[in-house]
Length: 126
Image (tube, rainbow, N blue to C red):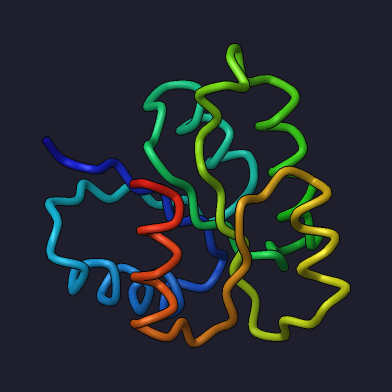
């Protein structure tokens, strides 16, 4: 069975870098990509990913946390909530706290460290 991973980032280079790191995770993965919130919402509604990596600073409105809140509000069953990881180039305690408060399961700093990614995926049970 393949793990369906949605990578949301307005920067194609950052999406590609994260996908490369995830491929090293040695599980079968099907990737879905979105460059903005609207595209990501469509994919979440139509494809039901197993895990979501979302950039905090999605252009043009910096609304990564808004996206996380929307997903959490609209999930049919919060017991089976889709794991969401916020990814940011400038991670600090406030951003981590805000991410978790909005419903994210974890936050990682760009460029994502391979070991931290592995630990995060293991912690999420994905």
